[in-house]
Length: 115
Length: 111
Image (cartoon, rainbow over all chains, first blue to last red; front, side, top):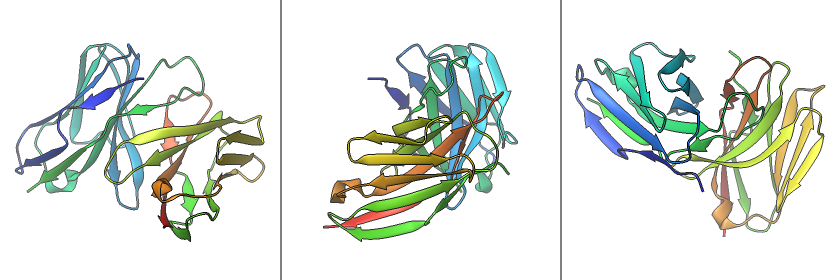
């Protein structure tokens, strides 16, 4: 089965630090996503990558950037972490954009706390 | 916001009972999917229903879709303690790559 691996399960950072969240998938999926999940707000899309070096902003990209240099790896970068970025971050992948209804495969999530 | 709404927000039932949760959305969709999330973990895909389908079954899961009301329901029959989790609906729309997730229903099944 597809495996989506997020590098850290829990992360504690200080305000102003640069933070890297890494995600790797092992099934040659073209599309990768970063979501954040907050109580009562569900999942909100931060960034989407439909192929290597290709990216599109999601609904809440402010304060974040992404990098996809290799197909299997999608990194989320918090340039200067702030307390309002404390959240659960979920990475997901799917086969390709062109097919309607492809399911998402999720990593286990990274719970980030910014102090 | 295009975000879907789910109700109830929380549901507590006894083992063996059926659990029903509902999802409403705002615009025409291609498909609707249901996902499950165990506490503090990632989401796992359960079932997909296409916009031209009205009902779909998978094991103890039954999903219905009413496009005229822009709503879907997920029924879990003969629930088990292991079904305790949060359940999310996700919709995708024509012309967009996005999947819009609902706010989720927290299900607790008491043994």
